[in-house]
Image (cartoon, rainbow, N blue to C red; front, side, top):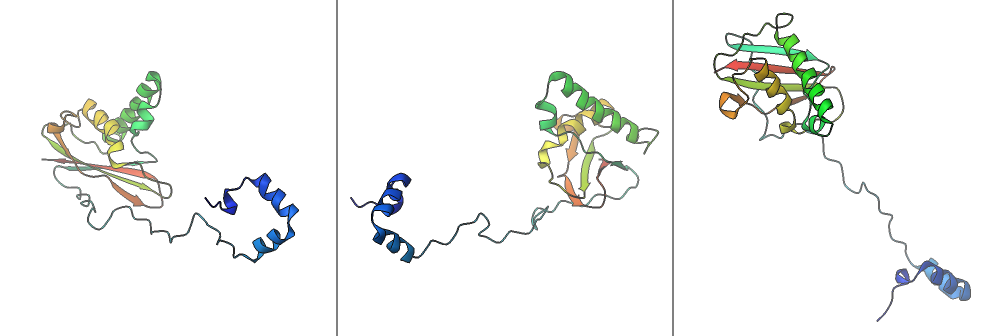
Length: 181
């Protein structure tokens, strides 16, 4: 069985090179392998949505359509909620609920309580950084909307949700749209 030069232990290679100068000359004459780099391919352009998976646009405000913009906030992800202690989980969901109560209530958009099934849209805009998984944001938002009576319930039969829309923009904000069905 023939052994490759690279299969030899480094200490033995060093001893062989020092013992026989012809080995050193032979190694220098061999072509070197091209250096390998991690970036051997051309990077793909960053796309938030593919051409086939582009979400529906947000509906314009009108009768039965309520649009609320919450600056400097996004709903807590599942990792934010479940990777913490029970006390911190409760506090994280309470913070989301309080913020939604403020912006949906009389200080903000003054959205009426739900009497029918509603469709929920969410658009997250941020200037830089990566976006969380689409299904990772709904739990905290739907729980808060249901507790505050902006949804009838957070069961699947009580609402319809659209895919979250991710955008790059100058400010960090979340737009939530509720539409009566």
